[in-house]
Image (cartoon, rainbow over all chains, first blue to last red; front, side, top):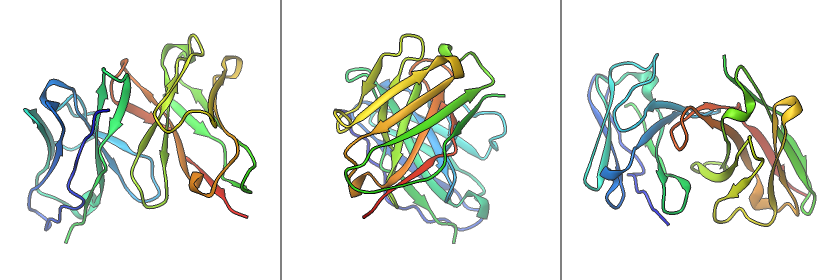
Length: 108
Length: 119
């Protein structure tokens, strides 16, 4: 089955840029979706299909995907961005959704 | 607007069964599959599988076969997750979620249902 890996934690100071990676075999050939989850809340899509942003999500959130790595970038980080972030793909070979293990982003 | 409203928290003893509901509104229920996602305490998101709301055909991810059953009542636009022979490791928040395009992102989520298994 398809496996995604993410760093457990990415620390960032307010106003700086956070980059969260999601690695998978030839992930560049798949559409990658990113979710933000705050404590006690359901996940929310912040980026879908690699780089599209849902309405209501700040432009500070952006995404890219190439080769074996997809990246979620959060620019000008704010305290309210502190959350867990998960990447997700559709694996057509198994006909399953696959989530990455998640990355905790503490804002220092 | 699209809403997925789940049933409330459950406390069950090991060996018992539980049925979690997910009531959909704001769209045509049979037009979008519904996924189920598990999140154990302090852990990440696990996709359990989904159910085709048009055909009622379920598909289960690895690790979620046998004791887990997805079902529907289309007359009330509701999907169900039933877990039998509960174990302590089934303690988790269970979410239902819906895509906007087939195999696309899960844009809509229920609020989650906490199932606690404890003697």
